[in-house]
Amino acid sequence: MTAAAFDAVAPAYDRIFTQSTIGILQRNQVWSVAREIFHPGDRILELGCGTGSDAVALPRLGASVVACDASPQMIAIAKQRAWEMGHSTHISFAVCANEDLHKIAVDGEFDGVFSNFASLNCSRDLKAVVAGLAGKVRPGGKLLLCLFGRFCLWEVAWFLSKGDAKKAFRRFCGSGASARVGGQEIQVCYPSVRRLKKIFSPEFSLIGWQGIGVAVPPSYAESFFHGRPRLLSLLACLDENLRRMPGARAMGDHILLEFVRSAS
Image (cartoon, one colour):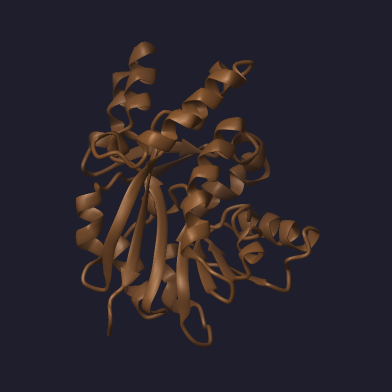
């Protein structure tokens, strides 16, 4: 069901998010960290690669990539993007849900794992994801994972202003919330940092995290900021101070967590 939903939105995904001003600002925040984590010669596994915007950027760091997504249509667009940008020899693609990583046949272990913009929030069983990663990441390998946060101040204020309390507080529901994607209902979960730390332990240890989009709003606010580039630039500058600040970092649209693979 999740794959079919994202198949339906794949043709419009870049226009709606990737190429949006807010999408670019949030991705830039993630990449300011990714450039510190991943290094030339690294072999990276990407989860939920979508249309391939991050997959084609990783080879610029000198890394090789195996990029996965449950949506065949997302993978088709990602493959075309890699070919057009001349990175097809450095990236291999696989249609694979996050929970099914054990089905991917690869030689050797990965030096790192990258997952951007909430693919893991749509996973049915994060423990299965962790089990699959544990068998594919070398000791000392890094995980850089970007998920929807448990509390987004922007989201609460945005939807309360529209009189929609259900959406304003949807992230607080322990069992997650349903979202309509591509005309279908999918379940989206919003685990806390504490919960994620527990799920990934003992195979992986959390060594740091920060907020993404604390001052910069979620992408659904794009229309409001159309024609207000100076305001968005100001919010992006403000994020440079807020996203690592205890308390404030937990209020972002996303959270960015860095894990390290424990010694075997």
